[in-house]
Amino acid sequence: MSSQALQASNMEQLLEGIWKQNPVFVMALGMCPALAVTVSAFNALGMGLATTFVLICSCTLISMLRRFIPKEVRIATYIVIIATFVTLVDYIIQAVSLALYEALGAFIQLIVVNCIILGRVESHAAKNPPLSALVNALGMGIGFTIGLFALGSVREILGAGKLFGLSLFGDHFQPWVVMVLPPGGFFVLGLWLLFFAWLAKRKEARHGA
Amino acid sequence: MEHETLGQIFIITVLSSNLVLAMFLGLCPFLGVSSKLETAVPMGIATSFVMLVASLCSFALNELLTRFDLEFLRLIAYIAVIASAVQLVEMVMKKVSPALFRALGIFLPLITTNCAVLGIALFQTARGYDFAQSVAFSLGGGVGFSLALILMAGVRERLNLSNLPSVMHGTALSLMLAGLLSLAFMGFGGIGVAR
Image 1: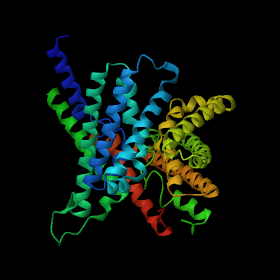
Image 2: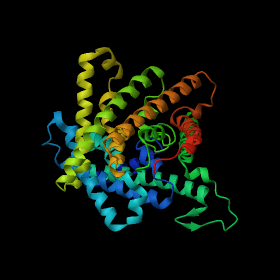
Image 3: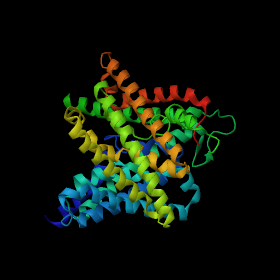
Image 4: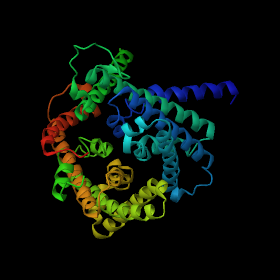
């Protein structure tokens, strides 16, 4: 493959994670952190970036090691590698921003069991060279972060009348509190999924016509 | 935390701080396995059992790791313990009840990546529960998870028979239902909420 074609395929893979195969809206993976921490746009961004970091590091490392990991114990090996990077992120966030650390709580450590990471590793990184794995992981990570941000900002605007802690509507805004409570998370994500399902349906209908 | 009795911890974990509907743990199996009652029930039981085993093991592990100042290994140790517990359940079930083993199929190994199980282990450490409290917490977690799964499966079975716009089918509808269930469970909030 010429270098130009390689670049094009890399670009395509990047976009696939961000849009076509968006982990939150299209594949509905990694729901637990997506709902639990997205009460504000800031938390959502923090969680998205932390997950992206773990995703990129573990995919690249596993892709480099893919010839040395025996097939029988591969899942255990992947989990240990992912857990190592998650522990790293846990300590980094604690050092950089204590407020974020307290807001995210145990959900930072729960990145280990985020199905997006294990899914990417198993279906892509374990079979492809490091560069391709890196690009794929980056795309998925960005897609996940965008998904979380879309959830978090909607919930913060509706539930608290703020975005990134800045008041948007002045003093007369009556916050729609249920949106920052657990049911609101389910409702907002459900509405986003509905929107994307509607988009897909419309596209299908247009192609059919 | 020390003012809570064991019964309170159990009830709160089942109802007002339900793992699935209030804490958002274990959503993947909750959305994936909840389309039929006959898979939801065994899945709930198997997950509850793994939760109990994982909770007991991680309590012991935490004592050990704290004694040797190795807290940074906690996460890796917990996940290894959970993976082995799932493996154990799988072997026992294969021996004792091959029919149930076949019925659950792929969902059994997937319990490893169920965040509710790891969540139980992490939260009991974070809240500093003692041994009896940990047992009550994990039992409550298991019952709460099964309850949410079974309720959801019941509602979804009914919905299969109703007339819906085609764009609503799938995960979006399940999430809306989960939101309504979660709203209902918030009504138990008066009992008290786990901090």
